[in-house]
Length: 109
Length: 121
Image (cartoon, rainbow over all chains, first blue to last red; front, side):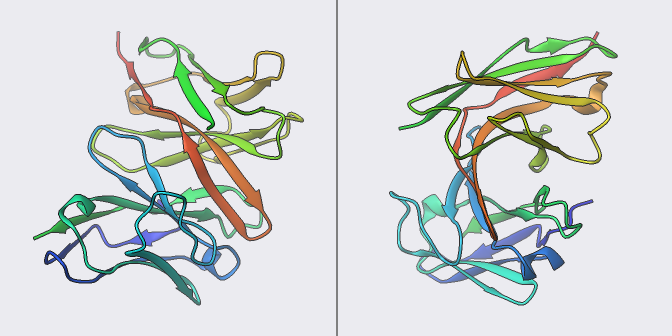
């Protein structure tokens, strides 16, 4: 079982704003990173650290964190944002091991 | 631009050992990064397998630790994964990735394209 919990599926109307969340005790100590994965493709980093976007990631993607919950927000969702989204962090055991959330399937209506 | 490329057999027999290599180009494996393996069973989510630093220090997923070995070859700028006693449950796409790990920050910034390994007789 994953130490990071995500909703399995979320939907958003085209052009609207959607928030995808990730919960876990380790998020009180570590920042989450977020990955977008489209079918048949490798994951792509979209948000890391406090709220940083790699080069080439649109500014409609943003990240935030509060307590044990990290969030990925897409402001003005586009059809091409339909994908699976995974959060990642380190575990809460103190051993600093990697852990992924179970993933959220985003559907853009 | 760092690039990672996985290679290895696409079919492994049950009880055998899965062996994959990740070749790193466009950057040195001796840089201040960790290097990781992640897998994804068909239709399922991502699973962190483990990681290695160029010094040879490793961290492993506790659920796989008894069967996993990750090693680094600095002369070839590559790192490798061995997973022993495989079963059908180990069938997955295996990705290698570069990890930036510092204090409370951890993220995978470069990924290989992934390679499907099927465990079957």
